[in-house]
Length: 565
Image (cartoon, rainbow, N blue to C red):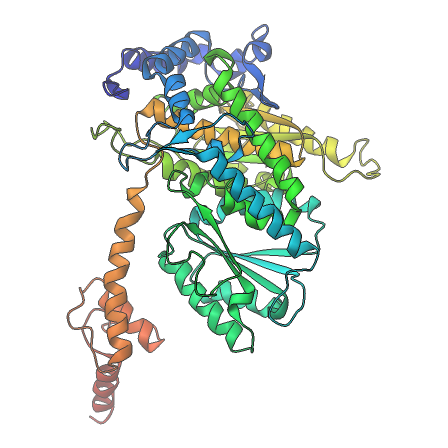
């Protein structure tokens, strides 16, 4: 809403007062969690996920005020407007239609005179046909050998979500095709992949909406030279996922196929589009990718239809905003007790931090404080032996624990200390969330646990493709609801531009040095000059050399003179 201001909303001051109240000792979590019906009253099921927030530092009065805030921000209406194809990305005057990419509805969704659902269906049909040809061996590389390896070439939203899903569903990857991700321009990334693939059997999937992203284009250039140097035709080993009409769109025989992505889907929301569809269909098979889409659609339908008090992503978003702004926790963690979800935290890290790490609202007003939270995570029980010392006795941070009832691998586990591996895993999950909430008193201060540390528990029945789709859509909806509560635009990312522009200036002087080895970086700012000198010499600067403006050649000449007296 144009007149909505988060920090000037009607309930903002009341929530500030509630934060002071809940910080009183009488409302320690060890007391809250013992209240009658606490778990029942502060848990919810929806879209195939169970969500328990009974261990969060909230009570009914706080939740009622948070629901009032959601009503004032009109978040449900905004979410519906987004789904209907309105231009909710106000700064770029675009729609945000990632949910349409996984909708199997036959009702037309018209945008600028065209049915985008028909467009998406056409792309899915193209993906299905292409992946089938790869799997049955009718589509091969330039030497006639079938593909056994695929490499996703893209950075940020062009790979993070896909990598999360691919790792989560690795148990279903039975197409005899391995999958790698080449994101970084760091030569170590390419070198590691290049050393273990068979180039004759490798398919490169280049993903870039604009087809101008420097890291991706640099890697594409290297791939073409890498393949040509081995007598292979790069065009027979390459497909693109890009915008229609971009430099990477099919033409001139430079690739096997081009799959279109659309301006109204941002990279971090693009897993259910061709960005994820092409590599995941090749890796898992198209049918499993479609099952993944249907799981995401199920969560979308819950999010669109459930009232606020039963809307799982909205409640999770309200709790997140409460923790970030009113309880003053600057970080939060995602700890899945299921190792296939090991790449979930990096995906949500980008999804949420790029969407909500903002200082202005949609109307261009500066927020009194920047929005967003720092997100990190690691699977349990690994995390317990990594950073849970801090979680229990250092600076507190909210945690979202994730449990899976039925693991992907079913086998005779036997019993150790009377329980199975799966039961041991759940014992740890429940113990950690309980111990964080209740703490433990001890006469020895080193063994004293303050408790009162908030967490939630999400439970999935299994990790089938549908379940992973549900989880993906949950975090997307949660992120967007948080943005609507803050009042910011979750679909732009101008914050990533300044570093790119600055890198462009440095790139020019590096290129100048490559063309003219005698160039001494004299016109480079003193902040960066010593690093460029070190880079081109391949040696660390010695004391007194850094920032002197001396070239390595000048420094060496001076030292020779000093040695000669």
